[in-house]
Length: 299
Image 1 (spheres, rainbow, N blue to C red):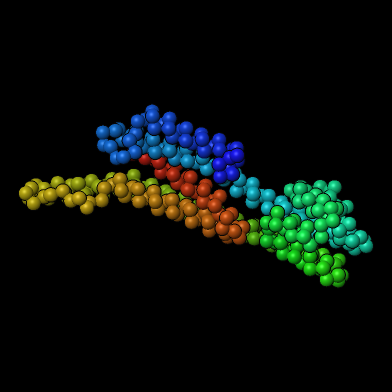
Image 2: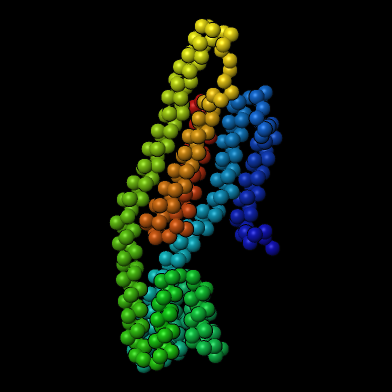
């Protein structure tokens, strides 16, 4: 049994990432405790490889998020087809339970497994209400959950269920149309979010590798001048912020910016914070790789 219910690709990615870190640690012989006797380039290269390994370890989780989001979209679209077929069956005079049994051989893509399970439960004599409860719980979709609640209530009340099913199908269709319209309308805003992030990233890199060295040189010159004026009074200040500490602050700013832009983009485009995690992963990964890579190749 996998630890923490991790799937095989996730386990392989995590093990590969750990192996890369261990091998690079041995090759560069980097002491994680600050050790000024080690070559600075070795440290920077080690941190760059560490960033790559973190991305490798997290990549399967990103793929899972993308596939799960696509699966939810496919299931909602297929449930709309399923609802329309239910309407046709009930309008022809067939009871809803018998209609579901007749539909179990039809191809509904990602919804096939759930439809077959629903029909098998009905065939075994499980009440339709309980079977629908399991159906809704397995799918875990708010849109489908509301539709199932309406269908259950209509079936329980014994009214004109075909009208209720028609209303449910119409509501699902409108929901899908609105989602597609929102994605089309928001796509430009999503692109703007990414553009803003990359502009912010470039500004941070320019400040780190162009402006910060100039400011540091000015500070060293002023310190040297003060030392020549009065060497007895010139003492090293332990509270002086080093350029490396400022560079680390730039990295933290980029990471925070990337994470929250991703969350906002996902919330705006798909209406779910969970959907923003994939954008956050992409932006944070870009931040780490670009920042650590720039430290290796530009400094």
